[in-house]
Length: 207
Image 1 (tube, helix red, strand yellow):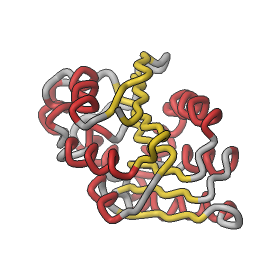
Image 2 (cartoon, one colour):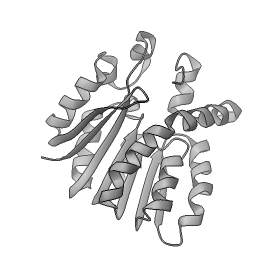
Image 3 (spheres, rainbow, N blue to C red):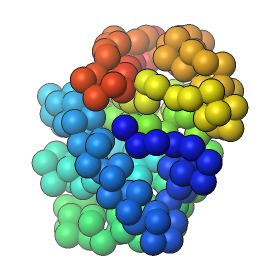
Image 4 (tube, one colour):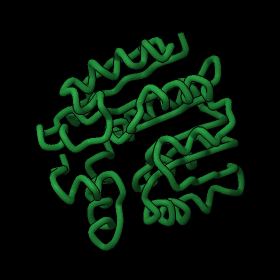
């Protein structure tokens, strides 16, 4: 797992510069098993509209575009570097998918219209400054039969918990807090799984 300390925290949240390229490459390699797990959940659904919050290197979005070919693919990330990189990765798929890449954090989804068949956030929940507001917006955006998939990074040092923006993450029980936040936002968690990578996956639907 990538060490997220000091300046590395800023890189994890908003990849930039030459270090960001290296950091992104490492993140992509380490996250590959998590992406495969997410893809396994999406394959049966075959979403026609897909939203990813915090797409990082764009690798998962590229997998979705190539294998599932949604009619609409929207992805949001605070890193200008990664928006440019994802644009290059996703350009070949624009022939059959309407691709929208937004530069911004989780609050950028406030400008979007739905519905979405699938909304995914892998290792970005910790960076949401107001998770309940974001979950409320997701609830409004997701379709009646849509899936919300959240992958959480299981281990964080106390130093990270103090710095990280999300108050649920800072509480020290991100997984338990995320479960409760989903319920409070009107979601029903239908899968709650410890992943082999040390991350944790939650799948929710509208309650």
